[in-house]
Image (cartoon, rainbow, N blue to C red):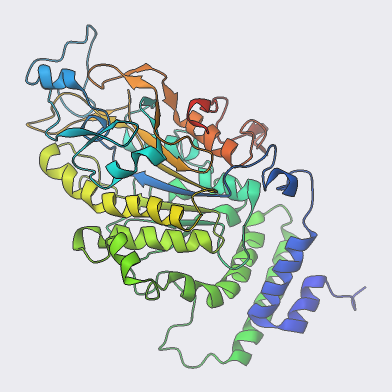
Amino acid sequence: MQGRISRRDWLWRLGGGFGGLALADLIGRADASGPDRPRMDLDGGLHHRAKARRVLQIFLNGGMSQMDTFDRKPELDRLHGEPFDPGEHVEGVTSTPGRLMKSPFAFRRHGESGRWVSEVFPHLATRVDDMAFLMAVTSRTNVHGPASYLMNTGFLAPGFPCLGAWVSYGLGALGDDLPTFVVLPDPKGLPYNAKGNFSAGFLPMAHQGTTINAAAPEPIPDLFPPGSARWPSAEAEREGLLRLAAMNRRHAEANPGDSRLESRIAAYELAARMQLSAPEALELAGETDATRRLYGLDEPATADFGRRCLLARRLLERGVRFVQVWSGAGGPKDNWDNHTDIPNELPPIARSIDRPTAALLVDLKARGLLDDTLIVCSTEFGRMPFTQGATGRDHNGGTSVTWLAGAGVKGGVAHGESDPWSWKAAAGATTGYDLHATILHLLGIDHERLTVRHDGIDRRLTDVHGHVIREILA
């Protein structure tokens, strides 16, 4: 038996180096089969017909103030400066509750739907008829780290797979040359929990988010040898990879229950293909001047987020299944955590995403991609109706706003309502579990059936909760 070689060995000897890796991966994909794979007759869904093929998630790190953006509250105008007395005990998360504060921003109705939007989002306001709003999203916590985990992984604690990882695990790749799940973090820094928000948890590591630093000279570190390293020849690289493959095989045979090595090999295979595909996908120079202006690349305030939104569109149309774009870094500033000064802190960060996000809706629709692409914009929790300090607002898990657009979503509608102060959900309350169940539903997945056995428990993204929010579905 010593003379026999495995299929992967044969491929390596035939193709050598990264080429052999790529070929091995493609054949491995062709061999994959089973009852829990996407089905052609369900338009790529697992359990029912899919409306969406891909997802673009925008996450506003820090907690967007709902009553200053999308949740107009005339009662706050009327009672501005009065003590907050809802008839029950009130606590601030990080401060003593102040007095009620009206929004410092003017609201106007927009679109045929007549949706109220504040002046901080003038471009998004023109797209409200494409959007469905969840007006009473609640959270089990008002602390950043656990709340971010909850909205991204369905659990308060670390160690669980995020939404993008579950989608990657359940549906796999749309193409072969780019990652299935890509994360575009804010260049000012990673969010709360750092990379824990886009972890694969206990799923195979191949499903974790691939981080691309769009503003860096080298967006994907170590994809190519450094320019200063002149010694690696094609032959040397091939021989090195063959030696590495042999070591990997021996290690995998000695540790059959460890998925990390197989994921690492898959990463090498993907890296081989990305050496050819990534430079073109990440290069924005070929975009027209009109497209660059649409996304705000010509304005300092919007250039960064606009670049990442445009890059997200390019990745989606080239076969990436799930793209997550972050606005705001972790920490006390450069995000949506406006504890100190709503009138001066909120407008700059709102301006940074307003034009680029509206551009995504326009551009995807013009290219026919919005028909099978789902866009989700969410945050970890909302803000309080009373002041913190002079003009800031504290954390509020009682209610916040999320919006969706695109595949399978009924545009121009709203579901749920907060109380007169936007303090707590009053009707149609939804949770992150419900949002996740709805996203999976649009992808053709029953959230109760996408499970993985871990530590004796059949784990799923929505834990033991979640209902599809059918009121916003087309």
